[in-house]
Image (tube, rainbow, N blue to C red):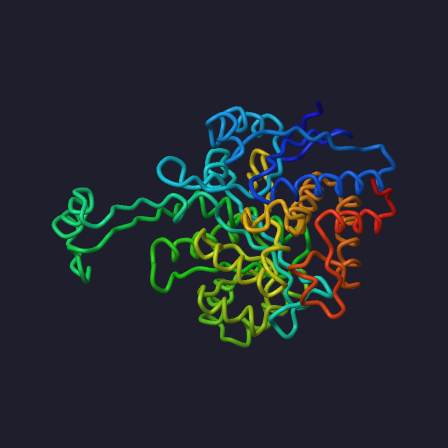
Length: 424
């Protein structure tokens, strides 16, 4: 089996790459083999057999629990550590005690601190917005802090009472409206967690020659967590990237010292020079702006909870979460897990109706992560052609003008046919 290696911040990729995968629960059993078949066809087409992927199954989720009594075996985590990358279908969240979320457990155990969610529209896909073609963004959502590291105490418990006394007696907090019936939560947001996320987002924007990075936060209310994210993000941009970026903090300082006209000229010059503009926006305003002027945004860096809302709204604007890919990445170690962003859809499991597009586009992200851009392009072009012709699974095709509903496997065959490959 051929393993990746990560040296001096660069991925060393052999011609045959072993990719661990989790089939997933529910519709995972249908979309995962479809994804693998399409990826194999794309790699073969792009590289004429000189490159290939060897798939290695690992266990997690309900399927794993039914087989060996473990929701997330240590052997699975160790395999991801060893092979650096992996891909997974949707997983059932255990009911009751123990692991709150398998997805969160994977992200935190492997320290996959970036949840990367690119959002774009495919021509032919129905959208609830007037101009979905203007939506083209990449979200960098912090993946290990905020509510993912949240600490809670349930109302009425001795722990909640103890925490309440601490707040009132030692911290002199008097503004809790109904203290005796309140539950409490704490969300950690750190300098280090913020910096590594924003650094990754800036590097991505510069590498891909994108014009704007926007820090999305609720710092007008949460001054030291969300507000800290904003200030630490700006400081990181200025301190580490120098004249490669122009921040709105610098703009505001210029406007204050030398006037708005000078600041406007500096901003215009920065854009002409191709410098990355780093700005920020309050989360609620951002959600409105994405509907009114989505073209103003290209790369988003935000905290965990904000990123959850933002990712799903943007996905809805281009056709739904069924075509929304996602990746969980640690840019320091090279570890990355790519995933379907939707649920297990037990209501249609086994009916050959599931849309594999989310997992397929996540596999595209994986191929791009490996530097196999030609194979990635094979898949996206095939999907573009299918959607424009109205060929899709029923969840998308029923809203397309002249749409033709395909089963999961028929959609697989159409994509492979588009790439000029043989249909098995």
